[in-house]
Length: 605
View 1: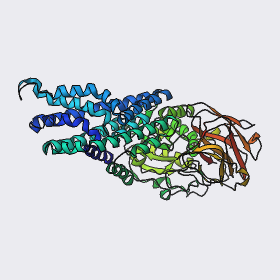
View 2: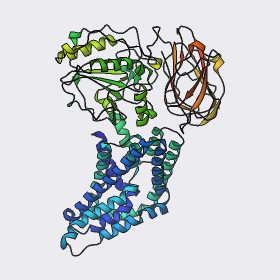
View 3: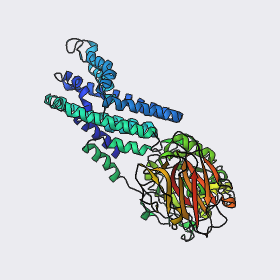
View 4: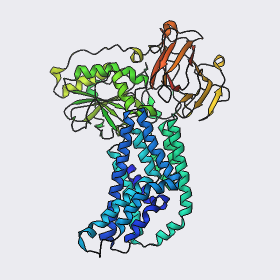
């Protein structure tokens, strides 16, 4: 509801923006006629036409993006054209000329006021034409909505936001109509200043599009787009962040992996967990929140709490590059299969940590590769996450047949407790005779294998400057610019890391600009994983791993061979080192034999 209010207020403020100038002549063309019979229908037609056209643009852009990576560039080309219309008035003039002519024809009276059927519909038709004219250049907040829809997927929520924005703009225009034409004269006097602001906005949009085309994440484009808004629009956007509860480390009851930020956290295996609560102590923790915030469903049509009434539901919050989430999957898959006929429904809620985890194609490939056949809801906007007031990956929520949350737990292990909860809720639902006895004991392989019984003394480490810590290269991190880093592996202390070669360290990742770059990390754990991605154009990147300066041999991970060689062919988590024990401190080094590698975060186990 808050985001709809913000979109509405953004529309109200549109009258202060230069983007409203092209439509004002058509709005004031009927200022001398009764508002109820002429002004109101015209504004209604304008809002509906604008929302319809903008929705088609959003849905079409999202559809193109889902085709493949080349489709993503097609969507960016459309955004670049939008930026060009702001930067170069001649381009906008050529594109809008047919629409202006249509608006002028519609604004001409069809005869004496009230004469004939045509005049009864002419205000509405004029509004439709005005909405078509307005759609290509309707301001920064609209740009944010369309950009987010094109790059992250359109939804019904997109249409509601666009309609709220249009309603806000029409509200301010209605006030202008009711209070006279003096506002139009004032707006015309601001034309030169407005045109300058418009050109700056266009340049910023083009810079953002170029950054995305070169492989930067979608979050950067959003930040650039916000930078083009007015101070009032910026304040509205910031209001969303302030009023939205932010996940925090302090809210967790269980121990967590080492982190220095206060965002959502991944919860790892720990030995000092509280003793299990007796089964009879399961209490009602709340009602099953809505699932309507899902941006897409995989392996299922959209599900609702109402449709699931009578079923026992396990909701699993996960993200596919999270090692702690991956290690729970053998159990989650086993529970889904074992108790399916008894009435258990498992729903995986995929809430992304990195920008690449928002892409439908990436998540669909991951679910297939991981053997997940139960329903998965993509929660790109964290809407379901907030509905459950969740705080961590992985997290399990157990819901009884009456739609009530009866238990939750964060992190790995305690699988016996989780399965006993499932059995109890199924028994309460009258399925006791259909419950298979015993507990599952699956064996995960590769990144899904169980963690070491010895605690890892190295913690999750991010390579993007936004959350980086432990960086030890001389001179520190140079943010968002290409820099040649000097080797520092020999001087690293435990849990320090360094770069060597030509890198650009962005907010959430480090990108290698030339072949031969390296990353070194002195760690103490059995397993070492690194979230990596190929070059921006999708070209695979070859790499070689060394441990203490030598090939890993028997200590190689599932994504390398004994000599340490491997290939980055997708954006995901790679297991690079898997030792028999993790008691010894060791120096890890990875050398990338090709340019373009993207490195996000180390995790250990």
